Length: 318
Image (tube, rainbow, N blue to C red; front, side, top):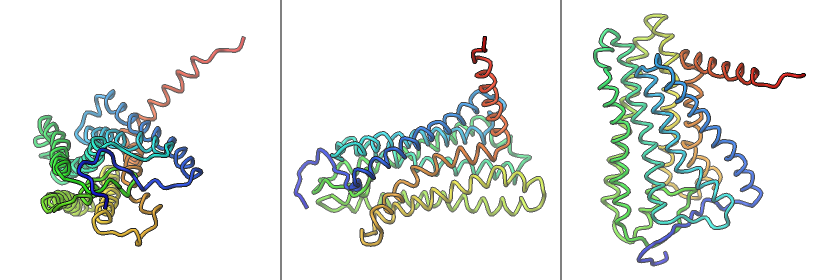
């Protein structure tokens, strides 16, 4: 390794593409990112302007979409710039900020899905107690939990990584990732390892908690047709979101820590590394927007009003 006392920039080596492939990826990303912005902002807007959607489930969905905007902001603008550049570098501070934004967003998604699971459990399994427990204060506490706990976890990890003396500056990914920085350390990273494993275990417990709540939900839902319908409308999208982000993030973490470049091609590794930055931000607003009846109806009214207004504003032939 190159012996460096202080690293000022990192080089992202996962972007070794041909010029033609770079332009293809740039075009694809230029379509993907605005679409992510559009669908998430649309769902947020529909929920915000309709007061009868001010219910815990829709507020948590709004939070999920806001988190998607936050997380993708940490990846797509830099990725688009790198695709047009011959030098794929990022400053030391910029790398730490990118690590914080991308992975705090991912952990926030787990936290939000957890509070959504609690909300669905109370609504389906304990409907008589739902409004007594899920008060406005409880909703606010759940929102604070879904943002504050990921922020604190990632702040600790980033501060630990920033204290390391590094003996290299090459990161074999499309973006900065915490363990890729830690692996460049000249000295022992035992503390970083321990804290990292604790955070992984904590969020795996989140996933297990959601799975256990779903076992109870399924048991309750099969008893009546009405409960089955409610489960299919509100819980199935939630379960799909959880499975997608859990599998993608587990692969990313496990491969970064234990994988070798001989196991997978560079293209496959790149796809799996960004899968949780592409699929959930698109899938979540689409499946919730199409599956939840209230959201779907409001979206239809919103677009119908805009179409009627545009037609009315069209100049009439003389």
